[in-house]
Every structure is written in structure tokens, then in C-alpha cells.
Image (cartoon, rainbow, N blue to C red; front, side):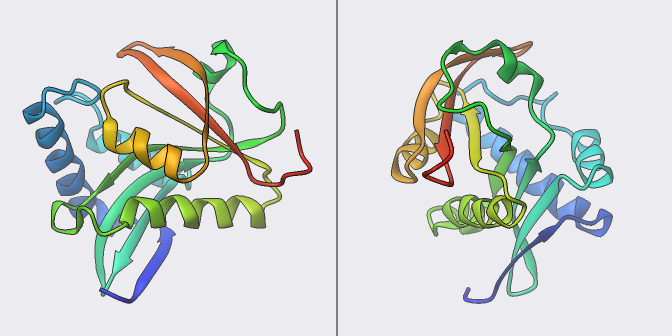
Length: 173
């Protein structure tokens, strides 16, 4: 798997994306994690992402191997952080990131974050924010590896999440 392409998702990718997300939900539930369930994320979330130009995929050798929502318009829940963000500059956020089961542990999620950073920098966005559940140890480890800093907690209808930020331009704060 050497030929990677990071691009906006298309409606023709929907079946592949749905499989990736359903497999991720099954795995989370089997591991006793409750961040995602049968009600989230669903096809309508992905369709809305695609319609709003927020859905992105990584394609490897012509196959969709990862999906995530890359949002540049903010996240309302982030306005009520129990803690403190590193900055108050415009940011990018990634939601609903999942990797195909056949591509687990190949660095695809890390690659997705790298591509998102590059896209943000191209758009002049100086901050990258993310959140995850307290028991999503793989994602928490990835945040640490990629240089994100813990900033506090946020609340969604589904529960509390740990929030992180990474400054992309060191001179911005």
C-alpha cells in the first residue's frame, strides 16, 4: 500500500465509508467502549459531511481505507470547554475518524491527521483541535504522539469527551 490519496469524500464512496464506520462501531462495542454506538455515526452524518464539503477519505491503491469529517467552521461544544484552549485563533477539527479494519495499525490515522494539518496550513488555519472519549486509548496515544496538548473536557449529548489542541504555526497563540 504505497499510493495514498487524501481527498474530499464523494457520494460514490458512501458504501465503503459506511462499512468502515460500522466495523469501527462493532470493534468499539466489543472492547466495551461507548463513544460510538448503533445510532452514531450513521449514513446521514456522512451524507451531511459530504454535502458540506467536510467529508474526507484516504484512498490507498484505489480503495477507501479511512474516513473523517474535517471541519473548518468550528465546533459549538468547544465553546464550553471545562479547561483552557491553547489559543483563540481559527482551528480545524476532525470528527468521526475511522480506519478500515484491514488497514489497522498501518499508520493510516496518523496519515489522516498529517494530511489534515497540511490542508489547514494551506488555508492559513493555525490551530488543530480534537476530542475523544476517555477510554479511546489508541486515539489518546495518537494525540500524544502527534504533539497535541490536553486542554480540558467538553460535553456532548452522548457524554463527556477529552479535548486537545495543537498549534500549527508556533508564532500564533
